[in-house]
Image (spheres, rainbow, N blue to C red):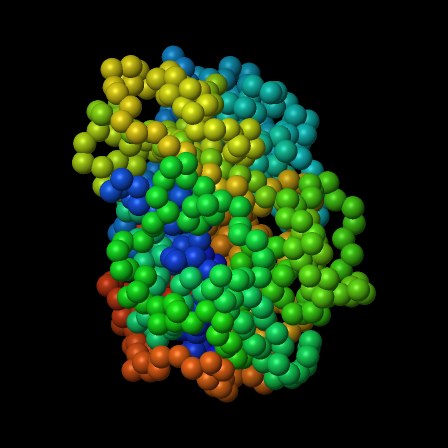
Length: 592
């Protein structure tokens, strides 16, 4: 397969970062354009009062082979902490329980934890075991599962309200960012089967030990520079046009237009903070001083027009619908769906992007269907105390407004006291509540869970909101998610919202980037594309081509960087062979 020529990756979240790295390693001349002043998308950080604050609290599981492969590629395997065995403390006002796996093979490894889970009666625990065995027999790929609510399926198998709230919700709400009963059964089955009922170590939890902005954005920018790619920050793409060949034609090439400063192609996305977050009183300054300038040569090239042989649209569905050239994604009629309408107004997607006569053949869902994908918010409540109030690195909670809480003292740079971040998934009830009202609700709730809070003083309190954090992963959403390929061989889609077989998580985002890179290479080879593209239309600083040769890899290394930590890294196929790493088993990349 010939190497791609000039490729523009639109979007610098995990999906775009992954695709850009994979294509650069395959020999492509890559330009990554990111509208924000930093890479990382929803997994980034900002500075507040001298501390680094993550826009959201993200975790991963050992079974997240694609995401862990990206960490290894970035040289960041040592910047996360991965449990030796799954171990979660569950708190409630006046009590606690512990869920810890044993060394038995799955699914027996969680039997002891379930039997000792004191928040449920013995009869309820036995009913959970029976329901879990029934879920293990499900095939998430069955179309009928996409139409079912998790709550209905569980209730039909003896899971009463208390059991669903006190156990099942612990894992499905955080993984799917959807209220437990309303979750898509197919995606919930993927989470439970792979993470909890699969290999005994599949659900071991990993957490970042440094700010997400460093873990993802800064590390990716440095790697892409070493690979010879151009990373352009504060570079919003206003449009993508087909230069020649037409939909399905041979040798189609593209014109990528960057928005002019002060103009743009649409309203500002919801959320005033970085990465889609909306911090109440937080400073929108996420990168360390000068970090962005180290790896961007085109920051001041607004209005530039770039010609490319291939384009990766690694952006949210509404933006992808707006940017996709007319006819690139014909789409197909989709039966009536219970998926709620998207909050993005239909007028934000030009009619030219939605063909008048969709192809009802083998085409996947097109822009008209992408608009039906609604979103679900995540709210983070940040509390700082003048002393340590818990030794737990993280914990779940039941019978409390708190869902999950994380100790972010070390990663934030706090030198005294303790910084706890409460993560609220499926946060429709909180996303518009003022920070003052959330303070009145959550400070007493934290005191109910951590008795030491009664003797501590709150030194800071603020809230961050990710209004469009993930898809609303409810029944019917799967049939609206497109594959990476489009009708144009040089145009592909990426993003955790696309059809990866995974929930909308970090793992799903990385897998989508790998899918996009592999699909683009195949499509461009089939279309006879691969010769170097002509220079950009507008003049810009000359590109340093001295680093474009692919580094020679030595055994145990990725991109010539430090050796991979083999204890936490995935196997060599997943860690190095980017285009084929998507063939691994499915699992869950839970975010909490």
